[in-house]
Length: 469
Ligand SMILES: [Zn+2]
Image (cartoon, rainbow, N blue to C red; front, side, top):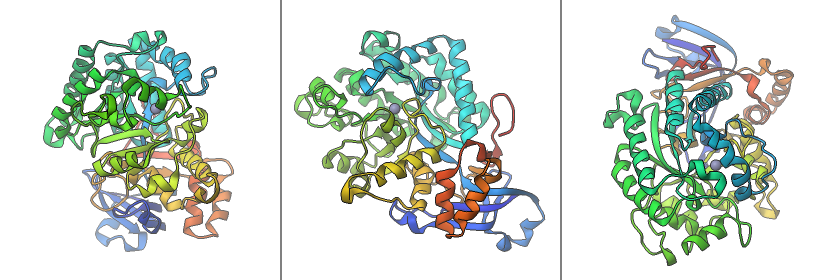
């Protein structure tokens, strides 16, 4: 048993987004006891720590103990492609910047270097769990899974599937048959690999696999229909579905207009919902469900939001990316009211912030800036929820991690304000306003330097170079 002493901050229990505002635990002199199996045995006030535990190893931290951050949308092959100039909005940025950048991962040595850097960046910012949009190249995916498992982080990922695209995407494209075959291979190779691949425990393994068409414009109705059949076969094993939805609504030739034109569907979501034939006629199996996460959802109709909620699908909200690509602002009140789970995504490389609290910072600002009575000052406890427990819920693993409740696997980060120049004093001042004010100051103001310890299942996570932290 190891006891960590510090300021405990988490969202307890299993609240809704709305309820999370009242589920904040802020325990300035707190204790987190982690047993030999990596589970949380005690979580609460230091003074309440059972005497039987108090003589065990005690690690005194100067700072705060928070659940590990969960990034539900991040592109591994764009690790080195943040802040790429010359693209503009989504479709042009993909063609001019992203497809060439991702094509470089065809070189296995380069891909391995990118995988190493990807893992290093995740450790630096305390992202203990991530849904990772993968590379087109199987060897690059092997490098990603291998390095992530070696480091001890959680990951869900799948190779980015593309069967059609512009000339600049040529290296990323495969035939329909290869798209299906490679997805099956990846599931067989990596889904639950660290747990020995046994189906019964694959659903909670550190490494799991997703079926990931890049987006409807990068595939055809044949691809989507066959992926639907594939997903129907494997969803029972806990395999995920991940893609993009309703990101760019430029009139005439933006993403949403192009999807409608290419498929003749009524809504973009229909293409993932087994209705990708003209008029949204039934084409096959739906890929929506409890392990389905769609990034962006900026311009959903009420019907699409209701369908996401009804199927238990989740939204990866990526406000930093939406600012960069001029994609607009996801309407906060309307989306939250739909009941669909909303979690946070960095969307590296359209997003250029690896640290989930930096994305929460943008989240607060963009929804504060919504027009008129749509403007919302999101509660700090809800921000913490979005970056931690909601992410675990979106990944359908809320019972495993996401907060510091007793019995969960101990995924947590140490945030030391003194490790970030000037931050300790700012936070002390914020604390005068109470727990909520302290948390807001912490989430809005913290930078990567303040993350001084990262733990998954109670084990300190190390970078590929072998350095702690
Ligand atoms: Zn994305």
